[in-house]
Image (cartoon, rainbow, N blue to C red):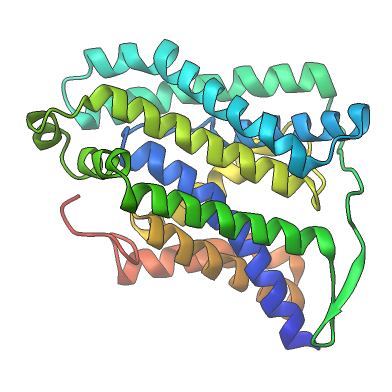
Length: 291
């Protein structure tokens, strides 16, 4: 059934967008770092999953136990080595945003260049649970359903962490007003570093899940960075629920256009939706004026 195909495909694609965008909204909303090298972390995680599967026959879901902490550690290291000096010298959050854009723009090409040297420009993929099953008359691969299930589970874990723990409360406080948070004895710089690393871990998880059913190469990080930025801005900067809704909406719109119009027009549909949301709600679907 076409309608079931579109809904299932849109939710799975949107779930991936939402998961990846949640990590970026943490990095930007809390640490105020606009990370243009964000997608490179995703591609690095996809290659790590590929190597673990093809070299050691390790399931990507098991490999996530290794890749996710590695993404957290690598992002924390990037924050401490590259971004903390920018945080120290920036006089305002606006100045930090500009500096971080320039720094991560350079980091993008460094990571991408290393990936090209190691893997070349060809596309990679591997077959993991690519078994078709039928749901309500629609045929879909098992690996896509598993990826969607993990994306939902990880999103719920992140949401619970932020809403139900003291650490999550501190992260939300820094996102709202870092000056007031420091008056409440919250170590703003430490919390910002934690949020940046947590965002990197979510991005790495997204890379592992995407590698299960999509082909990828060393140059695709920019595409995922662009999509994550669009979802973050559409949902409202720093708003996890907004990222979730915007991600699902974008996935559904792209799937509808790909199935009913022309697959070559999905990028145009993406930007059409993006511009429409910005015209109607300049602060995003769940954003607040004056952030």
